[in-house]
Length: 319
Image (cartoon, rainbow, N blue to C red):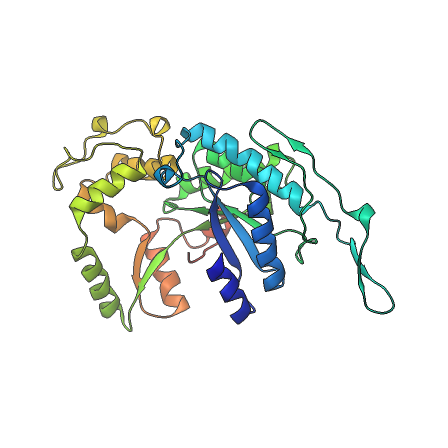
């Protein structure tokens, strides 16, 4: 939050979205911090809701199971939004002398009592300059899709490189939005990309090759095991084909379920055959330093026809 606050003071056009976990924080503090950033930045702040798949050892508490984390996150987000709306837009007025006056009838307690949280409210901050901060979310498991459809304005996602699976992902979010009486086109779907940029195509490719050459695959095994909830990759030879029957079902993963789902689908499709293949099919794309070149590189990597991106409902973005 300190970094985004500092950026707010030195920028005027970019949005500032902070990732904060619902598993290791409290909704009142989070609502106040994000809304403070929104006032500092003049209405450019947002919250990227994450549930965390690790980190419990730093907080002295057990990590809830995957589905429980999302149940907590749903209620957490509802509490935060209620707090952001605890002041009406016209709660603050000014008298003839220019003195600020708060209208008590325009500020209310939320008196939230739910399964996970009990919060009185209201916040001690006035309404957001943009009505409320932007809410972003990245999970695309069944639980993540439900959460995103219910509360998110922006969805970050990975693996949208083939037409039919991409249509399925976007439609799932839109159905979830509509089930909560939201407009289907009210959610922006943003696939992530990590461009490696050089002054020419050749230089960009050389930079990409250097990055891949420096990958510590043994450390990568441990990282994958941690992200996917302790799945053992020690017995998987780096150059041997990954056997599907050695991988768990996606719904059985307690770590980063949606990310594991992308990994498993890539193995199923044959795009990832060995552990060494993994870096080449992630979000990395090599391109020369221009907006057009980066877009062309993304399009070359994807099997989605150029005309179909808008039809699918995907907004190209760099994350």
